[in-house]
Structure formats: C-alpha cells, structure tokens
Image (cartoon, rainbow, N blue to C red; front, side):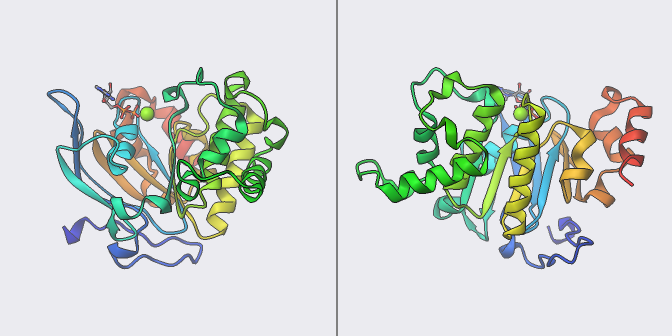
Length: 270
Ligand code: ADP
Ligand code: MG
C-alpha cells in the first residue's frame, strides 16, 4: 500500500508526516455497507498533523459514514483506522467528535453547562462529583465560543448556530488532539460560522489536528489546508492547491456542479 501514501507536504512550513505512525488519523481500506451496495468503498485517508482537512463530496457520498467508521460508531465490512499510530480503543481520550447537528436529539432536557461538562466525562466518570474547577473549565470553553452567558439555558431553546457552538465547547472541554467535526457550519448563522472558524484555527495554531466534513465549496480554500474528496470511493487527497482541482471536483460531483461553477471555485482560490 506504500504507493497509496498521499502527498502530505504543504507550503506553510508545517512538518511533513513521514510515517503513518505520526498521523493523527490513518484510515486504511475502509468499506462500509448498510445494505447491498457499499456506502464507502476501500477508503484510505491520512490526516496531516496540525493541519485542517476538509472532507468534501456530494450528498450521500459517505462523508459521515467515513467519520463514523473511523470512530467505531458503524462497523465496517473491512478496513481499519489508527489514531496517532494506535488502535482507536486506546486513543479515545485524544479524539473529540462533533456529530452532524441534525443527528442529535434536542428534546433531551439538558442545560448548556451540562453539555459542556460532558466534554469532561472521561475525567469525571459517572459518579464523581462535579467540582468548581470542572465548572470553571467548562465555562471557559463556553466563553471561547461566545456562549458563557447561556450556561443555564436548556439546549433545546437555542438557535441552531448556538447549539453548534455549545457542541464545539463540549469538544474543547475534552482538550483533545484530534478534532473530527461533521458539517460544523451547516445551518448556522454567519456570526457563528466566523466564531467556529476562529476556534478551529486556534486549535490548529496549538498544533491540534482538525478534520471536518464540509459542504460549502466556496469556503474550502479560505478555511482549509488539505482536502479529501470522496464519492463512495476516494477521489483525491492532498493540499488544497494540488487536490481541489476542477478535474477532481468534476469527478466527485459529476453533473451536480456546472462547469462554470467549478471554474469559479477553483479560479477563485488564487
Ligand atoms: P454524506 O454524509 O456524505 O451525505 P452518509 O455517510 O450520511 O453520506 O451516507 C452515505 C450513504 O449511506 C447514503 O446513501 C445514506 O442514505 C446511507 N446511509 C447512511 N446512514 C445509514 C444508515 N444508518 N442506514 C442505512 N443507510 C444509511
Ligand atoms: Mg453527512
């Protein structure tokens, strides 16, 4: 599989991952099937440490499935994932996952503070008391996403953008090294989008790795270092400059994007 190693070098002087063991997330040969046809087929992905990678592809391309398979939430037919070179089971504390918002049950009666504290569940366990320092840490994470004033609110009473910020705060509370986010900007207001991207770029500046399913092609070049294009099969992987090309977009989206649109996206990059 050596020849399948993607180009990991980028232009901003970030270190080049020369071994798989260093990769925050390495997926190999991942195939998942819910029915007869595989939803994703033999996917290899290697996340670059300390970079932001966008997983892009049309609706139903298997983007969420890929993340869930990497996290062991869905069981693959074949394939595996390692996190910092080790099997997932031993590395869970190093990964924070923000699921696609639509997949969460918002009627569950819980406050914003409760959600942020869930990020500390590994430290807190089920029965240990929540101490002042835990609350202070959760509050600091809520503050980072501009939600500290809402700590006592019921999560169900918030707007979509506010909910998304709170779920990012929960992930921040976890103090992970690898952040996996599924469409963090979907259905959020412009202010929330800006707040989220600021936090993600801070995480990157701290040397953490961000892998996000991203649906808005017009912001790929502005937000991300690397892209992973998928349409059930892997189409391309690499820096935005090398992999976010008209040809790759055409292959991923087919007739769903007009050639004019693709030109604008790719030419708009420079
Ligand atoms: P994306 O996130 O790229 O939009 P998904 O990973 O959600 O795509 O879905 C990929 C394919 O798998 C789609 O055809 C979807 O309908 C199907 N699928 C996803 N989750 C399930 C499930 N739990 N049961 C059956 N089919 C599913
Ligand atoms: Mg999805």
